[in-house]
Length: 277
Image 1: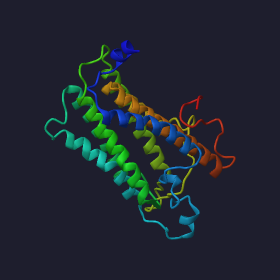
Image 2: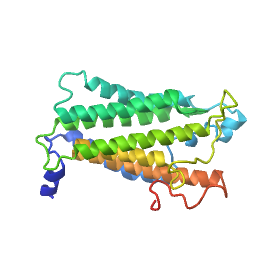
Image 3: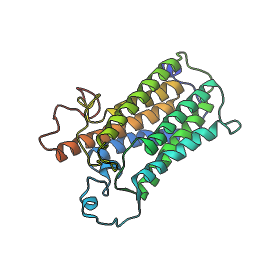
């Protein structure tokens, strides 16, 4: 086990904090996957009680809890992590070595893309509960900060250098994710109506003919890239946590499509991994 560890991972200086965060990430993989799959979803996007697909939105019922417009909510979710990645580049001692700088750069690009998509690509309707945004945002923020901190605790490099593989997977993931986000945004845009048609439709194109959430699949590939670029055990914990959540969320999304579009959504379409899951 020790040989495999030194083959793939940086040995880290002892850190109770990072060990605790690693355990939290692994626990989130289990809890997040099951709660999402069982219908206890984070209430944003189509799972918000005040999205355009909900009866509350359609009937014009005002939210009974504090809500913000969906675009504002998503900015609250992603912006703190973006700021953290940017700030690390300017804080003395925050980044140590070329790999730390590379990891910081790809994390910045990931969240910068997310913020740009929120501002200019995604078509939003309805609202998201403020407490949902405030629950998710610290997760992205802490994961970003801890990934960079764990990298600084690295003692010496592992035997295998997986940076190049990580970069290639990151590029493939972010490109595929962006492409499928464009397809989703196009579904809710009506060229004959300046306001756009923001009702939900069955996605088509790309890998949507194989899985309900190809954008999640490519996001998972991005996080594999992060883990290979970092090569710390903590980064693998973040990957496991992300995979667990995305598997549960994609399973719930597939169930939602089957329920909303009875008889129209193809049953052969899997949730996340073509032909498998």
